[in-house]
Structures are given as C-alpha cells and as structure tokens.
Amino acid sequence: MEKTLLRRYAAAALAIAVAVCMTPVYAHAASYSDSSSGGHAILVSGVTKTISKAKVKKTGNSSSEDADFYGTNAAVLVTNGGTLNLKNSYVYTNGSHANGVFSYGSGTTVDVYKTKIKTKSNNSGGIMTTGGGTMNAKYLTVRTYGNSSAAIRSDRGGGDVNVTKGTYKTSGTGSPVIYSTADIDVTGAKLTSTKSEAMVIEGANSITLNKCNVTGSNTTKNGQAKYLNNVLIYQSMSGDASTGASAFTMNGGTMTSKSGAMFHVTNTTCTITLKDAELNLDDGMLLTESADNWGTAGSNGGNVTLKAVGQKLKGTVTVDSSSSLALDLQSRSSYSGKINTAGQSGTVSVSVASGCKWTLTGDTFISSLTNNGKIDTNGHDLYVNGTLYTGK
Image (cartoon, rainbow, N blue to C red; front, side, top):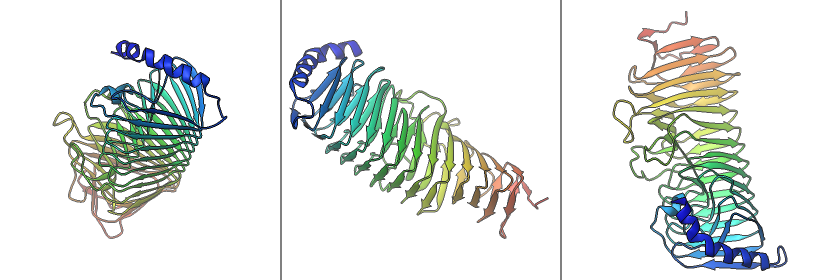
C-alpha cells in the first residue's frame, strides 16, 4: 500500500519540490493552497526543504483511512524519508480528514517552528505523526475545532514527537489535546481540551510532560467510552497500536480534571509516574481501573503501577475485580485518599516509603501493605487482605 501511495504522490511531489526551490526562502511570504480530495498544499517526498513565512490553505474532503495512516489530504505532508523545516508560517484546513502538518514514515522528519495551525473539520489533527516518522514542534499555536481532531496526534505505526512550549487547544468530541500511539514528549506547553479527555495513550506508547499546564473538560462520552475522565490509557484492539505496557510521566507542572477521574485505565498495563506535579480534581477521583468495552471479558481490566516521587496525591481510587494496582509512595510523597471503599476488589498493593505518609479519607480495602512511613487512618478502617489494620 505504501509503494502505491508514493507512486501516486510522485508527480505532485516533483511539482511542489520545483515550486519550493524557486521560492526565495525568508524573502517574503509565499502562499500554497489545494482544494482537491486527497491532495496537499505542500508535499515533500524524499528531499530536504526549508519553507518560511508561508500561508498554507487546504480545503477538500477525504473519507479514506489513508488520511489517518499515511497523510492523504493533509495540508502539509512530509514522507519517504524527507525533511521539512517549516518556520513562521500559518497552516489552515477546512475539510474532513484534513490534518495540518503530517510526518509519515521511518526517516522522515518535520521541524516546525513558530507556526500557527488551525483545522476546522472532523478527523483533522493539528500536528500528526505515523509510520515511525519524527515531529519536532517549537512555539506553535494549534487550534482544532472538529471531532476526532487531536491537536497533537499520532496513528498507526507511531513515531517520535517532541513538543516545546506553545499553546494547544481542542473543541471537538473525541479530540484530546494529545492522542498517543507514539512516544510523545511535551515541555512547557499549555494544553487545553474543552469536550474530550485531555490526553489518551493507546497501546505500548507513552506521553511525558515536563512543566506543562493541562486542563481537560471531558463533557461527552465518545465511541465505546463508558466514563468521563481526563487521561485515558487503554488498548482498543483495532490494530492501530501494538499491545504492551504504556507509560505516562509528569514532571512538575499542573493538570486539572474538570470532570471524571484524573486517570482511567482499561484493557492494558501501564506505569504512571508523577514527580512534583500539581493535580486538581474537580470530581475528587484520582484513578479508576475497570473492564470496559474494549478487549475480551475477563482479561480486559487495567493493570497500573502508580509511582509518586516527591508528589502530593489526593482523591479516590477504584480498582475492579479484573484489575490491579501497585501504589508506590516514594521520596517524601503523601497521599490523602481512599481505595475501594465498598470492599476488596482486584489486587491492590500499597507501599509507603520512609518519610512518606498516607492519610485515609474513608474506609479502604487493599490486598497487601508495606509501610515504612506513616499511615493516619483518620478515624476510618483500613483492611489489608481482609484483616483490620491496627498499625502493628
């Protein structure tokens, strides 16, 4: 399929490459546009280009899944091991499956700097990476309005995405700020979702946040989702993401969940590491794990290792009978909350290291406990494998 796609693009790539070479770089604003179904305003295939101060407009609809996997109908597509340096530009799309800036394929690299990207229709991400491509984004302003239109988006084959600073905002249903089937690192950015989860990780992939400001307002359940939440970590079994353990890491910064649990995990295994981050939970739920509508009944719960490193945690945790949790409080971390208040369910182990503290806010049922720090039951009952904890 890839070879067919590249042959189809060959003639267009040659025309665009010639046009780009004839355009004086940094001299004055250049305009690129396309209104066809499946075409591109800029296509860079197998070569290295620099484009600055460009105005890029893409209209025209596509209904093909090639738009999500290979970049069909994207305003800017870089493929076949090409490299594009896009600077100080404006990219606009208004058509279904019209992503903004797309990096496809191993060896392909997009460096985009101080550029504004806006997409208006459904299935139209801001920056998009698939097939092992690389996306490096610095000081961008990205705004998406359609459904299923993540601002920082990846799909089948994943890749490496590195984001520094900038502002990213989504308005559509099923449009998290970040949808990861790749390894995505974000530093110092402002990330806002107004109708969807703030972030989603699918399969054996990752998101790392460094000193970011994140707000999620998940107001509408999308697809097979059973719950509202802020960070969804799951495996859909669609084939778009390989199975295996995922990772979410947050170093510093703030994250606010306007509705639902801060984290929800289903049908996958993951490690969540939180280091000195400020978490604001409007609904009071820190973590939920359950068997939802993905995967095979009986083996589709969530399996989580939650590491708190110099971290203040608060909120309720629920782990259903098909799920497991290992909560590890390290480096003077504290947790104020309760776990499985209705009774023992799933496998829940808690480790409280020296210098750390757990303060209960309700009756709690867990499977095992390692306590080298301090536990304040605060007038509530803590049951460990069915036995009431007495502090001895």
